[in-house]
Image (cartoon, rainbow, N blue to C red; front, side, top):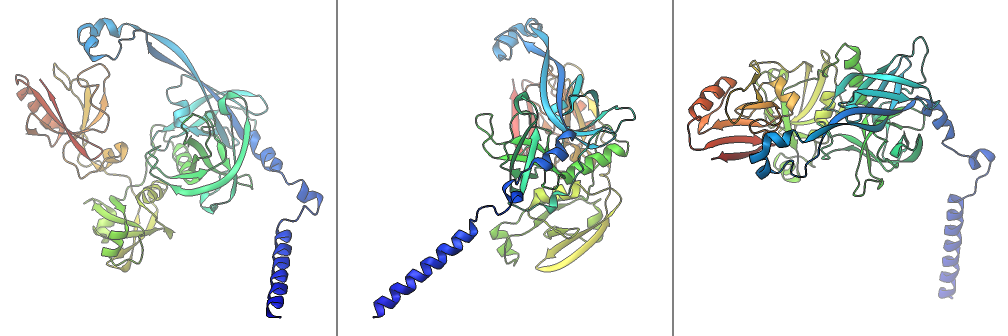
Length: 469
């Protein structure tokens, strides 16, 4: 009898479960549900999306031995003449965000372009000019002159309103086939450690993004632009469902800089602190219940936060009441803050909450950068060097805690141009310590008759010794 009762109950549970499952997978009950479509969003946004065509002149090597150090050692001058100029064309996408012709795209789409043509969805063409190129964020502002005509545009929308799982649409010109729309979801927010740009903070989506989509908008379901498509993760060159977009907050900060009259570089907020992620071990040592925030490991003497009382060892957990997950997010949040405004920083010190409110400011030029071109018959000839100060450190994405001078420019084909890179820090020449630009000339003179030249460089936190005999 008991077994019979159990069988009946089991049958009831199965029927109830099947019924619930059937309810979850109901067929459309109306024409509206049956005709669900992204078409209204696309109609609203696509007129503002432009195809970008650029032309630039590049010098191509015509000798297979170009770049070979042995051949260039003996035939350097002759081989440098074995090249020719070619006109190179490329394509990308962009989006008009204001009716007066302000267009946002990626910096890498238009960098070095001598001619830029934008084509609207209705086939109208305009010549565009670069108004601001910000390589640090990989964003560029273009301007077109449409006269008194108002162009279709798509407004920016805060990406912070997005949640993982939200539907988004990518619009662009992949492979030059023409305007294309793809859809997907937000796969992740605040994605970092990608080394795509200096701020390394992205929206990840599985909406198909391919070459040519760069600079096009990532659009929310209300038609607002939440990001600018910038890069994909791919082993073949095609979409693998892992695409990355620059958040609209960074876009807004670059637009604000352009409108303020900046056409060379974006002046960004500097608070003079650096930090590292809080790991499980660090969290345990600090008495935190979980890894959270950023452990401050550097506070510059001129930092407004130092004057307000921040200390090395504090853990930054919020900026303007927004949670901070890691160092990349902290850097991103600070970079999008307007200059001259109050910012609230919440920290934990030995487990106790503290709060600091300071005004955002530009990085100071102290000491003076004293940027100098090294000339003469020496191994560093053609390189530009500068003293390290907060402004230089922000521009080159280096720490102010290092000792030496930093390379700001390298002239191709001279001296150690094959070895030196922008951002390298020279700390010693033939055993002589380099603390400022003034130390370079006497050190080079002393090394002029030496049997070997020894240069100590620091790059990405790693010291390297270069010996030339």
